[in-house]
Amino acid sequence: MKTMARAVVAGGLALSLVGCSSEEPTSPANPDAAGGVTSPAGTSAATKPGAQIKLAATTVQGGDGEAPFDRTRRVEAPQGWTVSVWARVPSARLLAWAPDGKLLVSRPKFGDVLALTPGAPATETTLLSGLNQPHGLAFDGNTLYVAQSDQVNSFAYADGRVEGKRVVAGGLPDEKSPDLRGAYAHALKSVAIGQDGAVYISVGSTGNISAEDRETDPERASILRVPPGGGAATTFARGVRNGTGLAVAPDGSVWTAVNHRDNVAYPHEGPERGKVFTSYVNDHPMEQLARLTQGRDLGWPFCNPDPGEPLSYSNRPFVRDIQMNADGSKLDCAKLPPTEQGMGAHSAPLGLAFGETGSLGAGALVGIHGSWNRKPPREPEVSFFAWRDNTLGPQQTILKGFQAADGSRWGRPVAAVMGPDKALYVSDDYAGAIYRVTVS
Image (cartoon, rainbow, N blue to C red; front, top):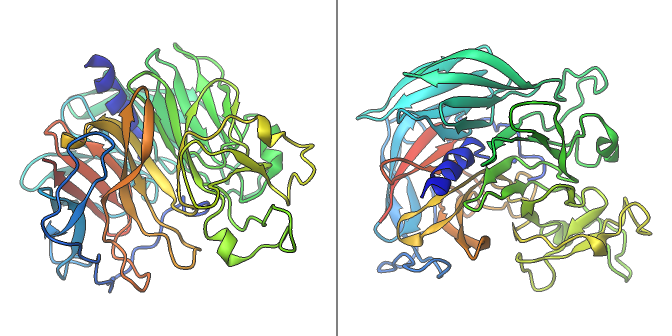
């Protein structure tokens, strides 16, 4: 379907950070984690959208013998799926498929965008270099959009080359902005292209709690919108602490996956009110997966999406942030529409893409980077949210096993996109790899 195809390409751009895990990790020289815990044999993948997905252990195939693939690595995936190392790409972040079948990979750490040509093995060329922390990638036909930390540019793409650079949105905040004087925690930007040609840009918050972001120009902790054909960027949605995951759904709606704040205080009545303690912080606030509309407010830092008790992540309301909005005067949390879906606190969702996923059907793919500050750590994975009735169902795991029982890791997925060959491609900036997952 034409609209799905366009949404897949636009979603594959921003593949798309726990509240503070948005920037790149340092890959270990020799990771020593043993890999995932095996699951019972004989399980099978779901055959209906939204059905519970059962996983089985599988060995990661291939690799070049360099860490972390200097030893056998095992992951868990739906029965019948195979996982292989397709390419070794240090610090691989977000992904987008070009019209000519090349897979583009952004690397903020190196300031470049690589083009991988499928083959055995895949061949690598440098498409763009000398950029300022390039992150989000998106295509609209033959036009490539690249989100740097301080601007979004467009290029004409043809035959594996780009030309005709144009500034779509400039003056975006980063650590070089004079008013921030180097104090900017979420410099990486993502970009998505609406079905009408509008350009959407995620702009993260200055820090964990920086309420002044809501009053800046351009507004930080927001999703900006540039109208079709160009023009000034304006605030589309606000209170989005770090909406690195950014993509367009099959129905044309814009969605974001949000890395929420850390060290939130207990907000409810009782002797613990206003205190910060591990058992509460571990699961609050949840990470958001939200449909955006013009003017929507996702609450930060005055309201927090509440997973409730027992924990639940679908259609969740907000509670006041007791540290920032104790009397409710800053923002009426009860009036904010509930968050459609979410993930456990400190999941660090990065890449967000929509597409058809074999027997699982249509849905959203989210790269879960895993926590840096939770006890025990939140595990990295690739998650799937089924698309039905023009909305997303609850989170389901389709790839995990990157973290050992002691919390050590050998990999951290960033983004997952479906390829033209119907395989799933997953970037991992920690292992420095692109995985190819054949999907049944």
